[in-house]
Amino acid sequence: MITCSNWARSQRQQEWVKPVLDGLSRHGVKIVEPRTKADFAITWGVRANEPFLYCDNVLVMERAYLGDRFNWLSLGWNGLNGKADFCNTNAPSDRWEKYWRDQMQPESTGEGVLLIGQVQGDMATVGVDLLRWAKDVGKQLSAMGVQWSFRPHPSAIERGQKQPFQGESRTLEQALVQCDSVITYNSNVGVLAAMAGKRVTCENDGSMVYEIAGHGWRDDRDLGDREEWGRKIAYCQWQKGELSQGVFWETLGQKFQ
Image (cartoon, rainbow, N blue to C red):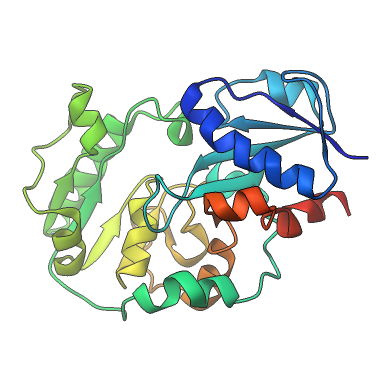
């Protein structure tokens, strides 16, 4: 029998853990005492090291990528975002067609580059000086004569984090419609840009858009196959009802087959 232990901490995290554990129980997974050794742990994010030390595998919970990120949950093995194994390589197209495909916009051009800021200290960018990165990219774009604007992350503003440039005033939706392309280090805005039909570049393979994006801000390539990408990303995130019913385990349970 496969065993699972809960390593999540906060009340907010526990609200997501409960339906996941309910769903696992439906599939015969034994839920053992929290924070103990098991075949796999379930936890939020990758900031805590203990689950990875005590358990051979860790099912990582995080905010989702498409739709209302507070009503969907990302679940993947042993890593965050693009570093995780979602067991979705051969995923069918049903979820993509049901939830997201009709929201994908045709590829389009526009005016200028939209340079995306992120929150300093976010686990997706650990060890990266985002301020320096954005400054360097902005200066080089200007030196090349490329029109661009900077959009800071709202949470970075709320936390009083220093910004490399003055932020623009457009809403994100307006900016994505009007821009020509998007440059991000590793922001979920890359996913939104791809859905909006805009060329996008990212700096590392932890990005959820890495397989269809340019790799590094100079790599201004066309978007890759968004149908294949969409099919897979639709099997990265789940609603609470699907969690409690155990629908997710039909995919992620392949880890133990």
